[in-house]
Image (cartoon, rainbow, N blue to C red; front, side, top):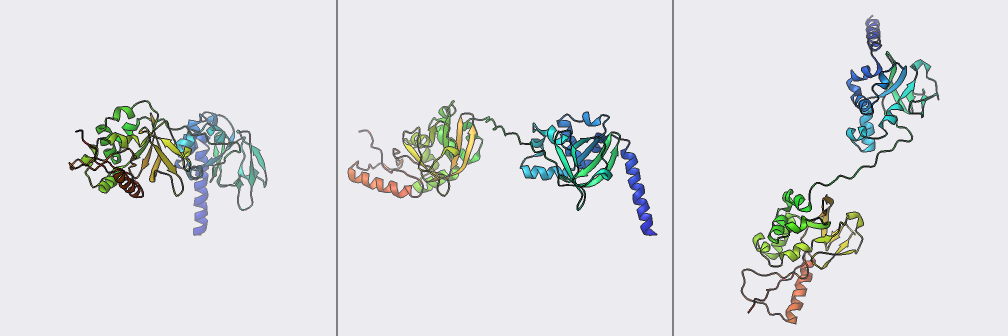
Length: 350
């Protein structure tokens, strides 16, 4: 008895839904159902609302939100990106057949031409499917046709994602550095060396930007303070050793490739085990600016023509060939740790 009452209640509910649905158009039914919010947004974006609100009749195979979310995951795009696709209308019309096709009319292997112009195919073995998409609810009647609910979005054979337009940079190299706390020492150095104006110019420039951690590593190696580094007479030489004229993207780097810097000396790239410049790991690439590109590096690279001045020492080191050999040895030793520098007192004018 309880089972009979349950069946009667279910039939009454279905009958009530059918009567209710038949009072609305296909679009109105979709609008009223939260499960079709992405479909409705797509119809609006593709300007198909009026067409599917017309007399018809139409048969619509309606993907749920879950079906659209599965498609977005497969394509690796967002809902907003999907709605902006130039072929969006083609995809939606691939779900619409002219005339009213009830589930009782479906046969194994049956084909139907969609308003997209391409055909869809029905199979019945193991449950009704269209192009492999399960038809999870059937015969939702509307005033201008019928809706069948499907669990996957049908994608026509000719569909291709639009090529993504590259983002247009809004900030210069210096502005990007100013807006990133990890570059505060670099910014302070550029200001001290009076290079802000130069690197704010048209360029283009390629900057290999050391982080604060990279500078702190250099300070520890030299056993000096940030102020002592910023007061080095050759500070500009170090900074310009991190800048190459022109825009060099990471895709252009090759093993053993060299590039001349604005310092006048060349830097060398290696790719084995990850991209490096003069042994410094390039940890982030292709940060585009209005006047070039930034690559982030994990150590400060020091040019050979940099002369470190001990600002707290009055004694001079004699400028002899023997001293030069010692300096080259120190340079080679430090180069092994990723930073190359020469420690020598600049001679004072007599």
